[in-house]
Image (cartoon, rainbow, N blue to C red):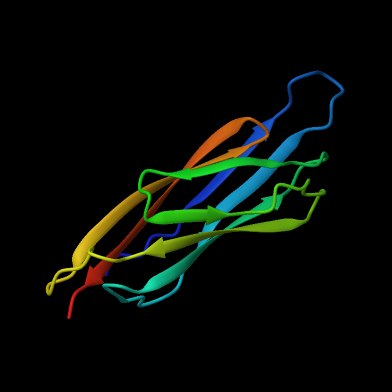
Length: 125
């Protein structure tokens, strides 16, 4: 079982005297997660606004149609958090030994793109 904790930080200040844009983004890890083929599993990504200006999650996409993102595209005020939920549909993805999956998720925040990797194993019966 491979479980990864990813943390990205960004800081952006486009114009002098403009409030800085800073945030942390990380995957909320579930320990010892075993996925059985056919399960629908939710992965969570948390975005924490640590800047002086609101941020917006503009887009979320995955390199597989089996992972569907859900997020709130409202402004995230300073020092507030928001979650992105990735619904993973594991149909036809497992093996008896456990098929390692490695998907990338692109999260665009205020027009800056971050990449998060989702790694785990899917087992068949």
